[in-house]
Amino acid sequence: MTKKKSRKQNNRLLQRRKDKAKVVNENNKEPHCLVLTRGSVSTDLQRLSHDFQWMMEPNVPAKLKGTRKNVIKDFVAVSAQLNLTHLVAFTQTSLGMYLKLCRIPRGPTVTFKIMNYVRAKDVLSSLKKQFTHGDRFLFSPCIMTNIQPNEGELHLQVTGRMFLDMFPNIAPDTASPDKIRRCCLFHYDEEKDQFDLRHYAIRTVPVEVSKSVKKLMGRKVPNLSKFKDVSEFMTKAGMLSDSEVEDDPNARVTVPDKKSKVSLKSSVRLSELGPRMTLQIYKVESGLLEGQVLYHSHVIKTAEEKLELEENLRRKKKLKEKRKKQQEQNVEEKKKKKEDHKKKCLAGMGITKNEVDEENGHSKADDADADDEDEDDDADYFRKEVGEEPDPDYFTKKRKHSGKSDVPRKKIKNFKEIKKSQKERKRKQNSE
Image (cartoon, rainbow, N blue to C red):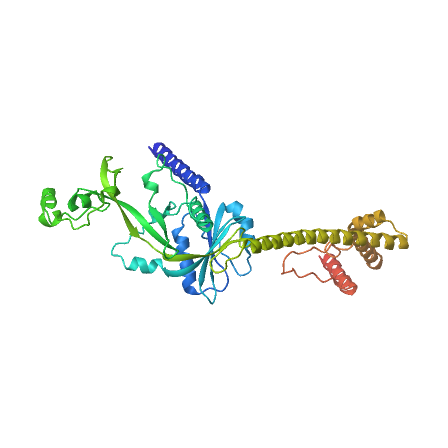
């Protein structure tokens, strides 16, 4: 029995590991986003960035945090290993708060001005029922938007494409309803020229079913101690009244139930999780936080001015390339000068480079031989003066001790003390 149980347990562990590996492989294919704060930022904006990071889970490196010493190039260098595709940076100035959405590694970059915001904590506190179970954040949210990436002006097309690329693609044929637990809403208001960002939890509720049946179908079993039979619980007048809002027939779907495995008609309902933000496009750049300005909300330039800016950018790039080449040439010239100077010095001393290398190679061995010779000389001197062979502990190599704490060395006695000790030994032997 024990062998059978152990085999079953091993099979279960293997199956769990395979399931986890599948989830990891699927998440690696999906887009990943890095959320940061740059510069001096208030505590409110910092908490808002944490709410945005919570919204984009699980495809967010939560342990990766930026410091003041870090530069954007550092995060771009690590992006390939962490499968990062987008970067979201929250910044703040004296004029307001900004959100920068970047595509890694080459751009483009869209800068939004945060007009209004409400934190997730405040949104959840206003609700009676909060649907913030951990299972909902195991899968990335889907996107709902009224923006089309192929319609409208250029800056709207770029922002629409950026929003769509931040979230995974959902195919209606292959997607399973268990993985669609949350959604993000990006609504564009043409009159105000602003974007509304909302975050919802998706849940399905069976339709045309009484409240008593819904409670039995839920996760928790209701308390039936007050009733003699289940029929009383089902036919009680108070339980039959439904005070819920009537659902739109277009929002009804057929979803298979996990317990009964029977397809039931159910309505799709949304409960807000937060945060809320109203954004306005401030600037669109072609590169990663730099490059040609494709759109600016306050500055409008003519075609001639745009051409001048493009020419200036080309000149700057050429200057950078020339400076890099000059630096590399200067480094090589310095190395050559050092080598020539060494050769001249050795030629003046009448020594070749090979001789110097040989001397450096054999210097350590010569030092070791010199130490051995010194020890032999001390032992010979002792034999001549005393007339006897020294003890093995008197003349030994000094051992090197690693670490801070060194072992105290033994002090060598004077010759007079050694003679006295030997005479005492002889007297003891004679007396015995």
